[in-house]
Image 1 (cartoon, helix red, strand yellow):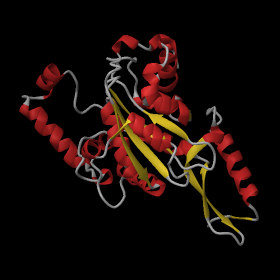
Image 2 (cartoon, helix red, strand yellow; image 1 turned 90 degrees about the horizontal axis):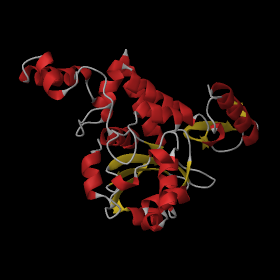
Image 3 (cartoon, one colour; image 1 turned 90 degrees about the vertical axis):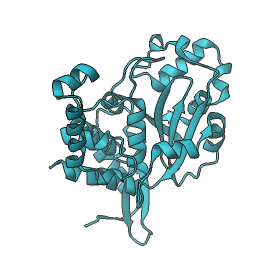
Length: 299
């Protein structure tokens, strides 16, 4: 049963205190812009509040990644079906067939360099595309590969669109940054304050930045909001006009786990290349529901 509150402030204060007590490790628990608090106010319409318990969704993704079954469900290249319809039996059957085609598991490991039954550490595109799918799928399946090809805008256009987004809606941007050879997500939740984004990423580590595991990023940086102006500066033509020291500082602040400018290799950046962005509105309830349905498959 949903609790009733006599006014909005009572609800916000109680829920905020709860989040603080449960998530004291987060530096910015007051900026958790994700999971809704549905408030039943006496004599007032039901309203959604972001800024409460956002951390739960991130932690649920980490738990799925760390679970042997959840890992295979989450990191998969089956784009034609909905992510919640992925079937573990079918996934492992495909792995069995691949192993057999290579002449057995040892031959597969010798030739490919990994055990296909082990948990996956997703490369940047794999993590970004699958989380994009997790966030945006409702009634129909979403193919992030096709969508990124047909519905893309450039970094300059994205910077302009950030100014025009409806603050009442949630958006996610799938970023294919050809300058860095890197793909990542920017979650742009609804807000009644200044617009911010949250970056989700992993990195193989063969480019401008060190290797990065998805769980490490989500745990330590995925819950940290990024000012929209910094995102616009980085993704638009304005970036190449910055002095090199400012370029390194901005990249480190946005994309390095420890914000260490010494980790940024500017020489690996192809500054003449483009930034492609696939921007899509998403329904927070679908995002929550998709995670919960994947969790039911872990039993």
